[in-house]
Length: 291
Image (cartoon, rainbow, N blue to C red; front, side, top):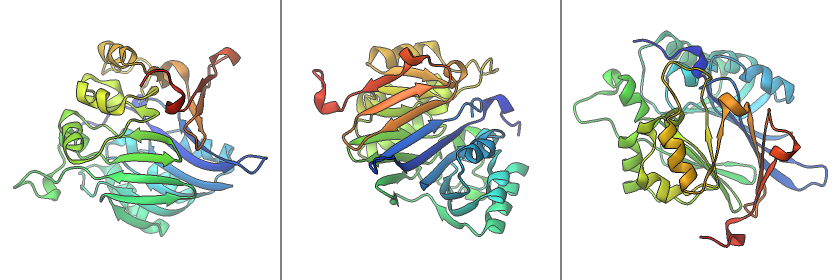
């Protein structure tokens, strides 16, 4: 099985922090590692960058690590992360994979002492934030988990995470494709969200008209490597989200994308490469003139 190259790495840091005035804000960092005091969660960890980034933030304890699915661009950095940080919980889709990096990651989970969780529909509290786990569909009949490891099937077994902090909502769904998006639209209540990470690096098979209509985000973030060989992201997909009113951010052009959210649903986005005029303030939905 060919692995996705390193330029497709992904990592998302979720942190609930107190400001000097003692009010809390939720921070979400979509790290520029390629396509790929408080409480901290890490959702996916590509082959490089995440450990050093956490060190720069003085984070040595991680409350929760989520691996959306076991492709190398989403778990390549997990063994190092588990070996260098105190990790309380580790959650994945529960679908075994055949690669060396998957085996190394699971060995690192066992060695770390982290409590292992499989993805079921549950809510995990992270301080004042809530992470709603969206379980993938069950494996097809006659496909035991030991053989349920085709690349496309793993994409459609991605774990979804809906982050809620007061009136603010962000949604991340790994590399889910049309099949899994249809499943969630049919089986779960998909709310309007403030921030959406586009599925599968902004490829055409990670977006649908129904998904756009349900989520209607203010901001859409694409985690994608510059000059990747897959042609990600899709230009028509970007146009679809922009037409729907979303401001689109791309890690290949914008670097790390920083989201700082307030409980009233307002939030601010800036990026590594933004000048002061590039800092964008988003109002709560209730203050919009448009629905």
